[in-house]
Length: 248
Image (cartoon, helix red, strand yellow):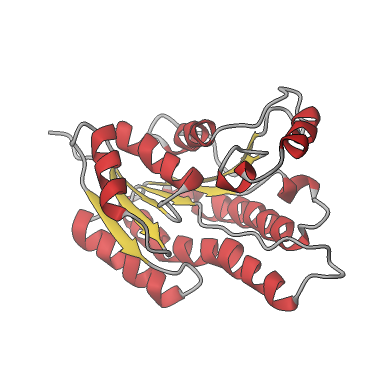
């Protein structure tokens, strides 16, 4: 019987991360689900098992990605259970939006710590195991604002631009070991964060998008899988915009 691939997904208990986990479950990957806030893990586990027809194994690990030691311990637990990590999806992220004149220093620091340093922490702890296997796919969730910038999001845009630069750099470092690193840059995606917006605001957002609609978490998850699955053997160091044509 063919050995299942293993995917570690950070921030995977809700939103885009959860949909990414569901996609990999459907494709038969064993999963390491990282989370930081207590969630209904039994419900999530059942949903993921159902998506895979109860074919996969799942390890839940609570870990703050800003804590390097916690990331090391998470990866050790994953290796103890599965013996390898084939795919890493750096999805954990936060926003603390404000104009720079009003932005608190701690709000800038926290967004950089979670989004950018968290991506470094988890990648650094996973990469040695990928190097031993001479195989790995790293997909990090950036954002179109990391390319275009956005008023009121200098911290978030800086963190996402940082992820793009980080990814291109490690793609060059790791290519000789058959490890591919890429980014997904979502545009406006319909999640809990956008659900609270008024219809008027949503309409104005849709007017900026050539496809005239927000994307879905499933569409982001499909793009992640495209870059992370075994059939991708020649795409590395790239940024794939999933944005309905917003940034061209």
